[in-house]
Image (cartoon, rainbow over all chains, first blue to last red; front, side, top):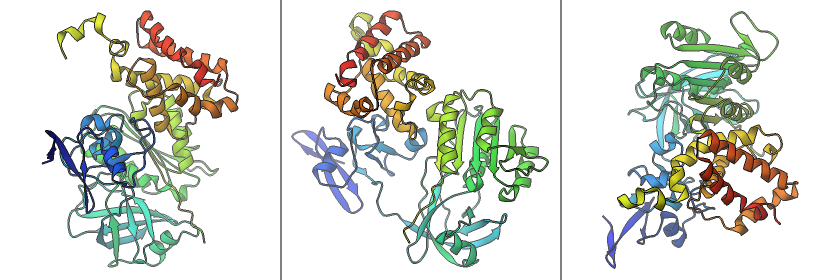
Length: 334
Length: 130
C-alpha cells in the first residue's frame, strides 16, 4: 500500500510504465500536473469533465465520480480533480496507446446494397458491453471505429455492420479486399452507450439511422436477455428501404417478445407497405407522448443524434437517461 | 454527522434545500425551462448537453448556497461574450424566473426560495458586466 510521509499516507499512481507519488491531501490532478504529466484540465472543480480518466483495476472513490454518467461510473471513469486516492491506483489517460487483439474474419457478406456484415472471431472471449465500439486497425496503421452489433452471450465473436462510404478508405477495404481467414487488429471496447440491468420496467426508446442499428440491436438484445419487462421501442430509419436491413429479424423479434415494438421509417418518397413515412426521430417523438422516466439510446447520423438528444430531453427524459452515440465520418486530408 | 447538526437552526441553506440531491433534481427541470424559453435559449449552446448540464449544476449549487469556487471575476469572464451578443437585464430576469419556478415545482418553502434567489441575484452585475 502507500508509503508514509509525516504520518500521512502517500499513494502510488501508475500510468503505463511510470509511477508517481500522490502527496497527502493532493488530488490525482494536482499530483500529475506537479509531475508534468500531460493531462487535460480546466475548471478543477468537477464541472467541465476535461480531466476525466479511468482506473480499470480499482474502483475510484465515489466522490471522484460525482456527476458522471452511470455507464461511465460502471467502467471506473473518474475526475482527477475530485480524486483523493484511498489506495494505490493504476490510471489510464484518454489518449493513451490502446491494446490490440488479433481476430480472424469469419463472415463477410452483404446485408443490403451498401452494408457489410463483418464477423470477427477470437481465441479467447472478448469482454464488452453490447452497444460499445472498438477500433479496427489495418496492418498499415489505418484505424476506424465501429460499433459492436452482438451481445457478449455470443461466444468469442464480434459482429459489425459496415456501411460503404464514398471515398471511405477503410470501408472500401473491408468491402472489397478482406475475406474470411484474414486477420485484423481489434482494440479494447470503448463507449458509454450500453444497457445497465436496472429499472427493468423502464420504457426504452431506441432511435437509429443506417448502421446505427448495429449498437441498438446489441443493446435491445441485451435488455431482452436480462428480462427487461418495460416497453422497448426501436425506430430504425433511412431515406430508402434498400438502405434498411435486418427487417425480417426485427419483425420476428416482435413476434417473440410482447414488449418489443419495431417501427422502420423511410424519409424518402417511396414508402412500401409496413413502413412509416418520415424522418425516424420525428416519427419516434410523435409516437410517444411523454418520455419522463424513459431510457433513450440514439445512434447514427450526428445531426439526428444531437437534435434528438435535445428533443428527448424536452419531452421529459432525464439527461442521465439519454445515451447518444453519433457516428462521425473521419475526414482525411488527401 | 452529530445530532446537533440536524436541527434546522444550525443547517445551512444548502443542507435545508437538500444538498446535491436537490441540485440533481432541479437541474433537468430548470434546464428544460431555459431551453424552452425563446427569450434566452440562444445563449445556451445545447450542442453538448451534458457539458451544459454540468454548468447548470454549478450555477444551482452556487444559488443554493452550496460549495462553489466561482468568484465575481469568473462570472464576468464567462458571460462577457454573451454581453457582446446582447445579454441584458431582461435575460437575467428570465433566468431568475425559471429558478423560482423550478424551486416552486419542487415544493420548496417560499422563504428558502427567497434566500436562493437572493444569492443568484447577487451575481447580476458580474454576469451583465456592469
